[in-house]
Length: 577
Image (tube, rainbow, N blue to C red; front, side):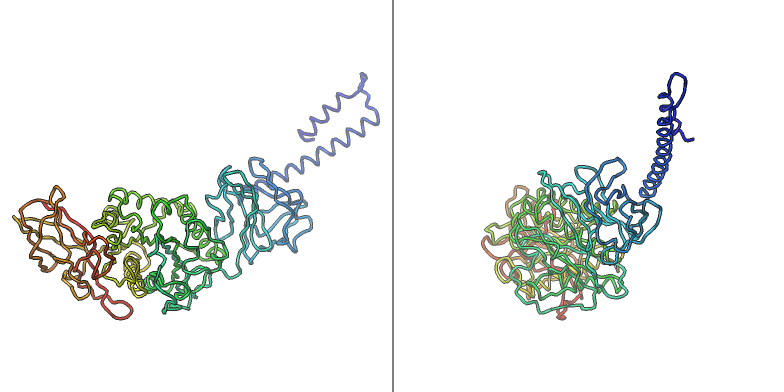
């Protein structure tokens, strides 16, 4: 007799009379209790086995009539009745539990039955994390993917005929039912693709192609399925700081349609990267910027920031459903005009926090503590439009790349490109800058290993002999040359000099030889040599009006139209002793 039965028998024995005589009624009662105890112990053992099996895959198991789930700590959550996704399973499935990878169940009698999940994907939903910040995820033999991240408390996930639903409780305490549908053909990439590489844009109006014109004549650059976007377009969200992106616009991936929205940098950037990484990878491009938005409107905790986080979640889910790995490979940051008067150190700090926050969130979404998320920064070139002669923001954009060469890559300036107004590029200007960004992406991608490097043309070091200043340029290909055909001379080809007090010192006699730039200053003083750092307040950006230089390298790279794609000198400065 078991320990449980023995204890019950002892308790029943205490009901005997003084002579130890057991009445017939008491005997029957004892027999019933003993039988009940044995059955209870059998059920308890089965339950323990159920928990053990369930623990191999998920934190809890479903029991009763499918109305609740219990996790390892004994906490219960309401689910609702069994979903129709269990069609064909045992009628007693609700009295059993789900285990393994959600592909089968065992009922109370130990009989096994198959479960057919939405979209033909075998998975089991589960909770991860701890109250009050739990998230919902799905696990299959392809791994685990999150459905929520940083969205309050999420609990009680349940399979539905089309996906998963769960209970969400906001930070304010409001509860609602949220759901995710799983599309039947989520990521129709080309045959032979083994990885989707996601590149996302952030920033302000130039990051979304404002005033680039429609339609983009490039159309669908690659219909084969190597260059993709979300169903809502290259820019799936609204151009404001208040509206979240509905999942309907982050639905199945589709071939990137360049003409669907205003012309932007992403089609050409993605295509150049696609050509560099080979046929085994597809590129997913999208932008989540907002026109005119300063950093404070785009940082972590804002709606624009959460849009990109949601897009990362959706990209991972869509690829997971399609049985493909997706990697978050980089951020393209085209920003700075709205914060044009920020100090160098301030804007550098913002960039570092911005990139780090996105990396932290990407690591959580991909469950990869070692994920490195680089930021490719486009240098601002139109600050004079806002009635200031000099800005430290372009210096910050260059310096973060010099300080953290594996985390930031400064693509280059934009003064050599055509502008449609004082601050926005023309459609061809966006296309050309997209190819420049794509060139930097391709260099860092290094054929798909993502361990390469990139540097813009810039001033590397300087020496002074009396009043003669010699500056060595770095980052270019071949000789540094003066070109006044593309960029007009703003005076001394864009070279200025300031002394230790900040006062300007006259410059003359600018020449170039090989990779060095030489010029003369009016008095023999230490200071700072500046390149493209000063302009005329009120002037718009561009090759004939904005802050600029006439220096470029001798690269033989070409744009899609066959014209030369040089590296133009970054807005930069170098100390002179």
